[in-house]
Length: 320
Image (cartoon, rainbow, N blue to C red; front, side, top):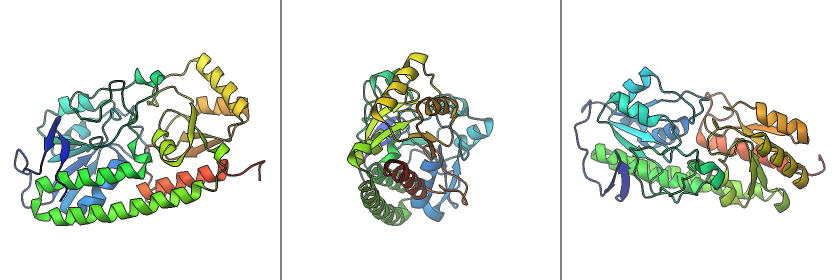
């Protein structure tokens, strides 16, 4: 039984009490809304047929800069439960919740996670979601890209199962069983990643991305995050000429093998740095899933695709 701490509607609740209001449709599935495609994928895996899920951000959208639409307000207002990534990832979420004016409970998946503090240069860009008060906050801001460590996703599973069980206690055993099954998959994924990383020489386990988002991955698998195109956790930030100059010099001095850039961001600055240094630019999936026939239709496919690209570009030496 997943009874413990949860962030619901801005309050840190303990235990597995019932919801504060009745379900919208007591005889139908629980109406659930998720902010991002990655959050939605995990919620659907655990919720199964007992929930009717809507995801706010479309495939390929950048969660940092996405401007919520009137239809999104309706999706939140009509939901019984809203799952958010949390940690400030959804930059305009407060505005949406205020505009929706609903009593929908929100569950932050940042809760329960030991959050990484952001580098000092990135902290000024941190969004402080006023509705989200979680013990994982750090005074200088947290890194919200939790999903790059499968162990964080195991915590997500517990949080999701507990939140759903609060609303549908008659299906608690189903939610817990699915959460446990997903956690088994996550452990297997973690082991697979560790095996793949062994193919990369330790001196080449260096990461440069378009913004600060691979820190959890680096910490878990023994990489060094040596630089970013944008000195922020936010892909909507700006980079000064001085910063880009320092980064260019660093990439040349360290012979960094690749620059990893998200599929959902404008690659113009990264392309300029790539051309100036001769460093290959590699597009990977960082903040959004793809269509079912794409290379990242779910979380597990996204992680495997990204790791395979890292092995391809960081594992090879002397162009071999």
